Length: 399
Image 1 (tube, rainbow, N blue to C red):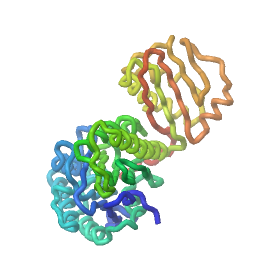
Image 2 (cartoon, rainbow, N blue to C red; image 1 turned 30 degrees about the horizontal axis):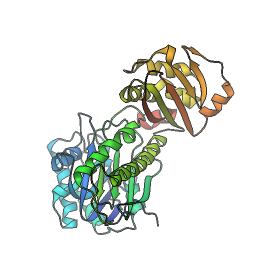
Image 3 (tube, rainbow, N blue to C red; image 1 turned 90 degrees about the vertical axis):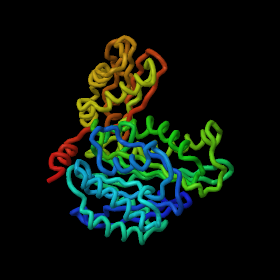
Image 4 (cartoon, helix red, strand yellow; image 1 turned 180 degrees about the vertical axis):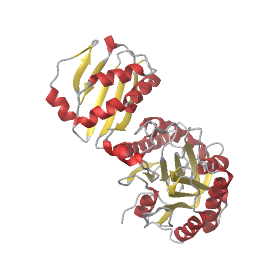
């Protein structure tokens, strides 16, 4: 039996097939606390957002509070569906709340799939009733499958540790393969922990971790209308509530970053049509903001991503992408490495072993390093190659 999202104490979950997807694959899941949990969310910064995002922002206006459950459907995103879509999101929350004997204001909602279509709300409410009657610690694999759209494989991460004298677990799952370039959010990623911690401190930790994990990922430079990461803390581990600035908080922060980092790498590696995970590290920038801008400029470049797909050691595309970013970049101080091999420095290309670099570009994970030589700023972006399969997947996504 595979356990991940319910591995932390105090959680149950279930997934089901309610008929949203024409394929007949699982398409609805509920993750629930056995009691109210401390919770924190971070949502997309796209100006066009789905009804579920509007709902969760309305019940957690400060991004934190007490939550009992998270209900997710795939196959339809409930975006740009007007007031009817808002009613549908609220209906999902109310129906889930009824299953758990709580209130709708304690239920997070997320939807993913095609934009602009109404949810088949009758099928969804029936699915919620079905999943609500099956909640247990034995359904984690089905929950993950119910969240997936174009994902080719599940994305899960679990870390166990000791905090405050108690054994603590942090677990996360994520869906996302296309329309991936989060802006202060992620695709859809529920995270659970049995740590005792306040909603306020949970929100602080989540926001800090998001920048270098989920927000470091880009598949196609497009920020989804439905992105949400939500963390629920049951407190069932029995530790004394974590205090800000404490050693326990720092350990929690590091563990949360490990979980979210693993999920982020899995998302980038499973990008639509991807054959390689690409890690773009920029160091030596004037500051971290410059490093982030430069790294993401390379990671978002279609010319660079297609070169990696073709195994072409074209360092010029890396230099171009660095230079077009908002970061300060100077050719005379710039150094570029592909797979550890120096290919550019002091304003010009270097003689290098072409066969060695071509081999590095054929590996499942490709490392690009750029030292701007201007300061101490550092950032690593995660992306994937751009293949013909990406075009094939997205050319007829709705048809």
